[in-house]
Structures are given as structure tokens and as C-alpha cells.
Image 1 (tube, one colour):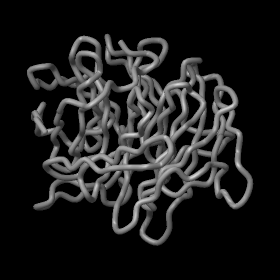
Image 2 (spheres, rainbow, N blue to C red):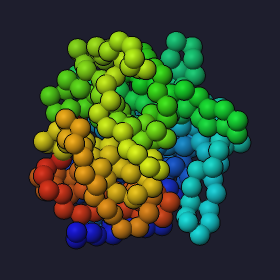
Image 3 (cartoon, rainbow, N blue to C red):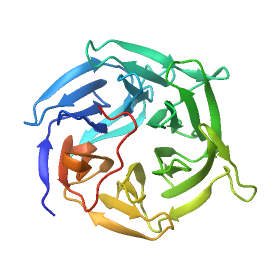
Image 4 (cartoon, rainbow, N blue to C red):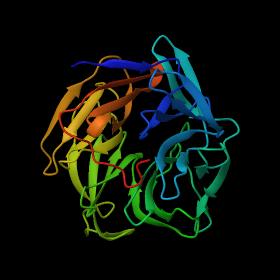
Length: 304
């Protein structure tokens, strides 16, 4: 595999968004920023977000929408930089909107039905202009939140919970025909599929499904999953933190593992000519790498 180091020295990068001009947007969770990486690897802060910016995606208005988990505490040692509990000033999570031209930041949502968002993690826009996002929750010393999936409009007028409960839901993606929503859970290392009847409407499966979804894949041994992207063939490409690579899961559930150099692979997106370049964040090391992908990635609905 011909792997290229795009940049390094970032403070726990995630949420890569490939832009049409060849640049790449990432969040730096520990630093609290949205950062643009140029084709030459140069870094420029687009916006100061505070808290813990996590996933990012371009919306129908051309702004960048960010899941902000509210902030982590951190540990840094020989293995790199890693989240370790909750930030001392944590209050809640939120969905933020960033004007990429001016860097202006506004909070679009910080609650649903009067319940605060705990730890928004990742989001994906559908063709209708709404977005699904995961709420990972927060892990405390002796207990942790149960997670959920929400659907919201970009304009801030509507948010609702569509799937609950999940255990540490992380990545979220939509199938090419937008009939299936995929969600990864970090700690159980599982991927769920939710059948969609319409934008923001899930056709829930009955018991014994714990959340209305159907299990696509579960991984034995010690593994942890992070975010995901879909290629044009409908394969789910989900980052595997422990084994440091990508699981490539066919819609029917068959899978294979693509090993990557380095450590702590968390997020993947597709960009470059014909969307045939995979960009992966190696978060604890502060690196972003790129390599040719075997097929084209699925073009985001609001690629710009």
C-alpha cells in the first residue's frame, strides 16, 4: 500500500472532510478547533470551537456542521494523546455551524425535547438536507450514558431522537440509495443497520433488537470501532482503533481487514480525483495519512 503522510503535529484530529479544492478539513478535539490542511500539508485554523469538536460535514448551505462532544480530559504518554474522562468544564454537547469564509461559529442544537445532548460524535447529511448524528454519551468513573441517534434539520427548526438505546454509538453513514442508515458502536465493536422509510424515519425492527436495528457485523476479540465512510459499491469502511486499520464490510455482512501503519485509526473519508483517495486520521499520533482506494468513495450530498 502506497501510504502518504499528509500532515502531523495535530492535537487528536478527527472528522476529515475532503474539499473540492484539494484541501482537507479536520477537527482537532484536544485543541478545540476546525483546521484546514492544504495540499502541501500546511495547517490553518478555520474556527475556534471550544469543547470537544468531533465529527464534521458540509451542509446544504455550504457551512460546516460539527458535532461537539463538550470536551474530554486527556492523557499524553509514550503511546500518544488520548481522551481520558470528561473535561472539568464540561456542561453538555452541541451541534455547531461554521461559516468557512468568516470562521463565525453558532450553536444550532444543544438539546432534544429538553434533554441536553451528552456527547455528539459524528454526522451525515441526506439528500433532503437533514442530518443524522450519533450521541456517544459520556463515560464517567463509575457509570456512563446510553447513546442514541438523532435526526435534525440544518436550519435549527427540528430535532428528534430516532434510535435508542445504543452503547457508545460513534460513526454514522447512509447507503448509496439512502434506504439504510449504518451506525458503529465503539466498545462492543458492532455495526448496526436501520432501514429508512423516509428522511428521518426509521422502520424499527421488533424485539429482540435492542434499538430497532439489525446487526450487520460484530467483531470478536478485543476491538474498538470509530467512524466510517461508504464507498460507491455500498461497502462500509469503518475505522478499527485497536487493530489500527479499516474493516471493509459488504452490505451482506462479509468483511475483511485493511491494516494501516501507525496507530489509533479513527476516521476515514474519500477525496481526490474521482474520490479514489482514502484519508485516515491517526488521532493519538496527530497524523493524517492518505492512500489510493480500490474503488470510488460515495460522494457526499453537499460536496463543495
